[in-house]
Length: 207
Image 1: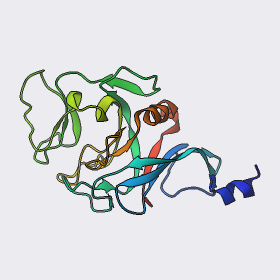
Image 2: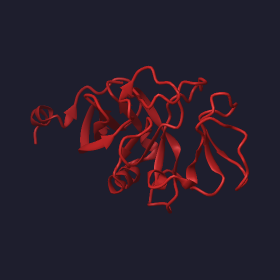
Image 3: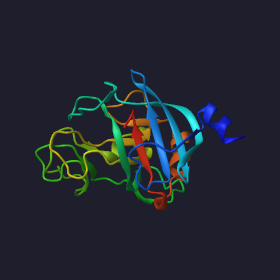
Image 4: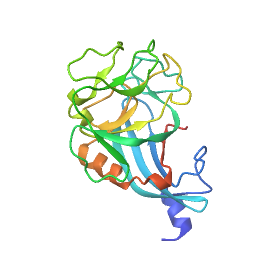
């Protein structure tokens, strides 16, 4: 297919998406309202982005997309973000190229805005009460959502207390509390596609 035909079909974007820096892999999540969105996977060749998968239906936060995300508001933060260097999951490594951490008892995500480790992975002794409170999640107990997930690095550099935490790309189970979710088989294919050297980004809304 010619470049002109690809552009007309919406499968190629030139000169590129804004704020994609040096990334050569991009996940886009677009929504016109509500809790569902359209997800696409893109690879950059020179200045142009070629869609390699999608569109696919994804779920977002129960409050939709927001440019003013706050802890507990149920919104998915709009913008363009890195994907974390580690992929997590209750299930065994499905064959991803990123570092993989299989969740065990005591693996938490700190969602307490008063904590010094707010919006970070924490491991505490199995059975021990963690020192952080709020809506912090016992990751190893949450299924099917956390059978596999990638971290969307929202509110990461720097971390701002109360601005929102634990924004993941995880297995679908309806609308989310602010994450993006896909059916498990499609999520696994996405996670296998990601390459660390490509510095992948995720673009939520107009970004």
